[in-house]
Image (cartoon, rainbow over all chains, first blue to last red):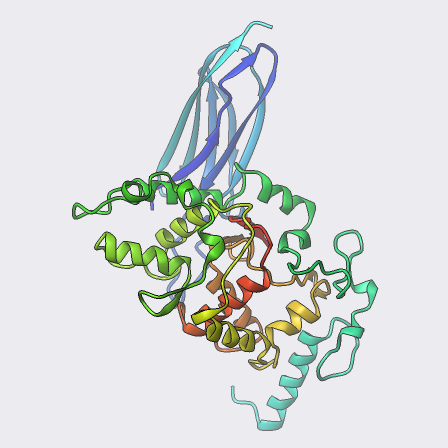
Length: 109
Length: 287
């Protein structure tokens, strides 16, 4: 199953406004400790990192751990100051990544 | 390890006691008058008494949840069940292969199926059987699209079921129990009242008699099925009505029926009738 997620990136804001990005990843967050009905170990598969950059600056770098429930939901806020591209990236411990992009247009206050 | 007979019997009694009594009550069948007010969290839910139960519909499991989970269900972005609605929408517009038509080619927008989920399960005259939403989807898939049926509880079937049921959000459940469905309905009602498993509990023991009481830290709901498929935190994923039946059966230490078993279809019809008038909440979030 490929990575997929829902993400809501604001498109417009006034300079100085606090805006929010909401993310909901579609992910089992397998710890590697569970055993399936056949007695086999379910391989570990976690989203272990979520990053976000805004106009070329890193504004979020979150580490996720095995105790986090399936389909992790993360929301975070920041101050909109300049217009720029927003890139949200989920990193899986298998090396796979998923990127969602948006553009935030900032009007002068 | 094999336990000698009498020890086994003692264990069974001890387990039954643990499960059937929230407090220090005597063994055997429990009766409604033993639900004392202090076992019901007054700020969250009122004890279910005949007078307090609105007629004909009961109370949705929604009202048995805390404010946080209610908020999660109501948030159309953060509700994790919406991931399956999204995936269902992708499948809806995807060509199934072999030149077959897409769902969208016949039905147009998914919203054209609004209200359908509220009327299921229903008797199919063409196939002389009771059919629920999953079976209807697979009928379309096999007869119209010429594909293999999706297995029960498979991700694509869950996604499509959730997408279609989501279109009926807000529509009150309204199934027909007359005519050819009457026999199935009667069987479903008997199943609801039938004691089963090591603990000898019927569905009605918890979900009618003891709704509103506590089972350990949890509130027992009325077992209304208007939110399915549900995103269940216990499962960390989404599940169908039938998965819930199987889970409940296992919880009272009864052997569950296989998915799609006729008994579960009968039970689903009875429960849909029992929840009549309650608006569909798909995808609901439950504990």
